[in-house]
Amino acid sequence: MIMVNMHKAKSTLSQLVEAALAGEEVIISRRGKPAVQIVPLDDRSDENLRPMDPVSYTHLTLPTNREV
Image (tube, rainbow, N blue to C red; front, side, top):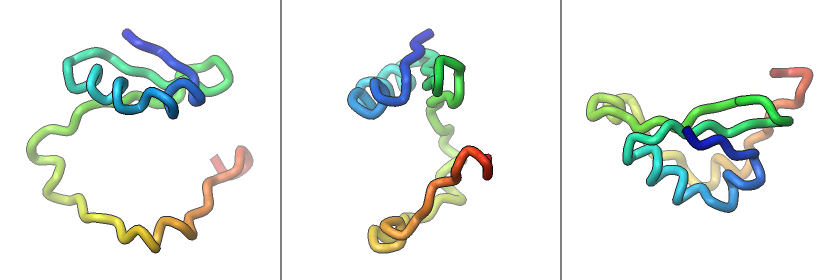
């Protein structure tokens, strides 16, 4: 299992994705606690995915701690 903090995950995302694709369990922590896991998608997962328009995500707002 690989566990990295958010800062390290941002700077090594490509390597973490490769590790997950190779079968490694990859966890990203926030404030020292496990927060999310990177897992590969199966072949059926892409049926419901659609590309996101680059312009549309420039206006996204991230939830604050109160909203989570």
